[in-house]
Image 1 (spheres, helix red, strand yellow):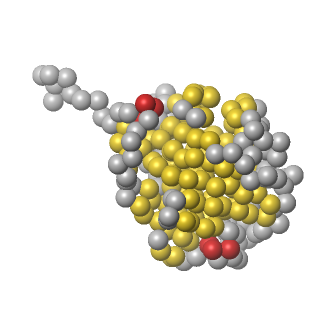
Image 2: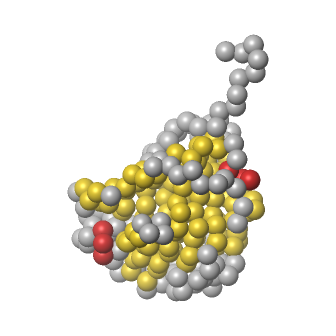
Image 3: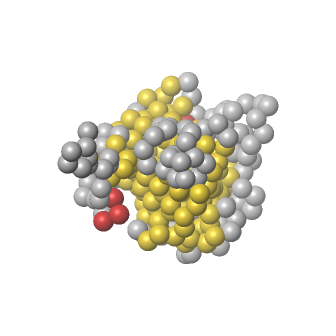
Length: 216
């Protein structure tokens, strides 16, 4: 792990973990990322990685500064920004544990040119929603649960969200363009301090269909 220009930059090799039924037919690829945090703080002030159990801990205060100096006026965040992709369906996969009192976006599918496509939000009452509407998880506070999010950058592609390997929602994507996943805590009102831990973060890529006999 390297600290470059105030960002924590990580590259970890893909691991040969046993795939769940949901990830069969996918290939695990190296996790490459940068950590975004309040611009006036060190990475260690809002983020910690424990390699002994592959656990990433993100926390932020609502009064913290944005991740970039003025004129940026977004609310404070401590987030992992995963490497972008333009082709091939990809999947974000991690176990999640949300701390009490958290009101924050904890995961996103992001359109590099036009902003968030899908935002997964943790609420202080233990609900996790897609945007402010669809409830995909209850009783999330203090409990470990698995989150998988797929993103297909192709024409008519979809974003699918799985909670403990059960499909919780499917949403239209924005077609061919550059996307990336984010996770951590992007603070919202109603929370002085937000924190989420992510364990065993993996990124998967859909394996290409084998060519039929006689096809190139």
